[in-house]
Length: 114
Ligand SMILES: [Zn+2]
Image 1: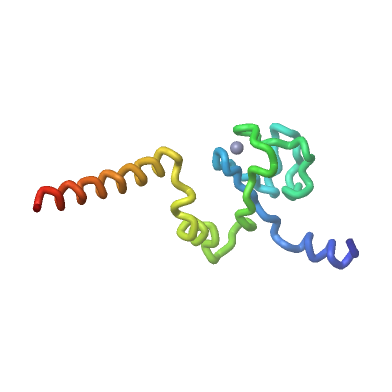
Image 2: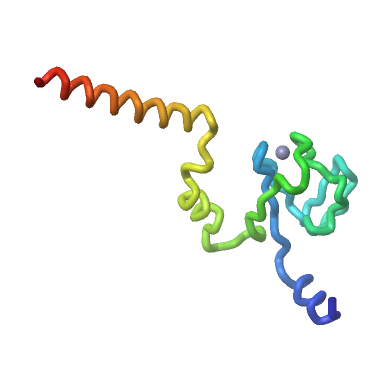
């Protein structure tokens, strides 16, 4: 990487990463006490054996949620876009079985009319 590219990266606010398993957010400006990661360490510079300090998920389980203080509400927008994907499996089951139950009731009500 050229020195110029390196500088451009360093002047950018570092991206935070959220653990998809437990919701823990790695904040580069804070580092991580548990693994003795000094403050200011970018997520990409974490050692490959670094795991989520809360649930021990691997680095690949983390999603980039953008730098701190993004004014656009990027995270909220992301929530809207992927609303269904953020449901827990139990909530998805309720949705699926709820839809099935509704369909069944609809079928029964038609049957009752005849
Ligand atoms: Zn985690």
